[in-house]
Length: 303
Image 1 (tube, one colour):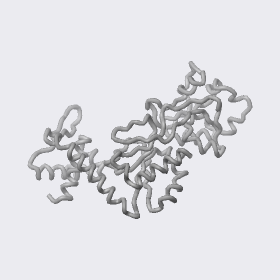
Image 2 (cartoon, one colour):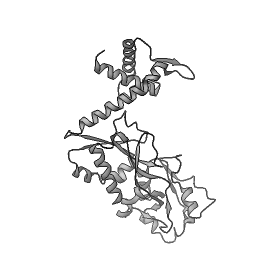
Image 3 (cartoon, helix red, strand yellow):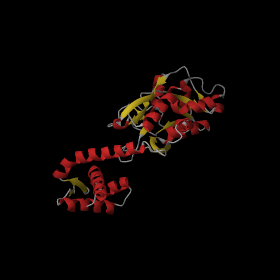
Image 4 (cartoon, helix red, strand yellow):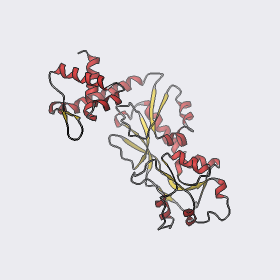
């Protein structure tokens, strides 16, 4: 087996062991399950020993043999080092690509309105923006840096805090201007409340119940209303007059400044338990393009 084929076989074996499935490994590697299976079998033939056996508890899944299991940590470390080496080789390229992962809403409401300033400062760096709600494997998907909203802990990643934020109700100017309609927080219970489900069930994610409790409004059912699983769409629905949204200050900043939204009850300050973080693999912290983007994010966040 020549070196390139052997390396591809090792990648296929590692992904299959991690997912316990040829199909899931194939989706990650962007090949067919048959191709993954063939690569793993070629590695087994070359080594003269099986690497998997199948377990049938519930549904069939791949299970690494004890020999394969002992080898996996070294194989993963080696693949990680190869990926880092490839990144370092790319540093000198004038056409370097920086892969950035952010949520669709953060891209729309915060990053894209500002990204021109980074591109002006680093014109030789192309930015590949990956907007995905699902968890991203920074190694397998060759991600350089991302922005995540949470408590600051993501296994295997360094997290540098960018921004704290407040939560508060917002609505369209026309709705806010209706005399006597929204004089105090208890008036909200008569309105259509817009719920953000983008991180539904995540510990600490701000909800209407949290804000109303802080505002002294208790014992009120808030489950009804308009429910949307995208934070940018939540703000758009409020701006179009479809109800009152519970805004996150980082997301709503530009809409408030432009007059598309109005903050209600500004005397009530409620801090979110979560914050925005720049996240990246610690071993990649010194890569120039990554460091430049991280520093730019910090500067924009302060501004």
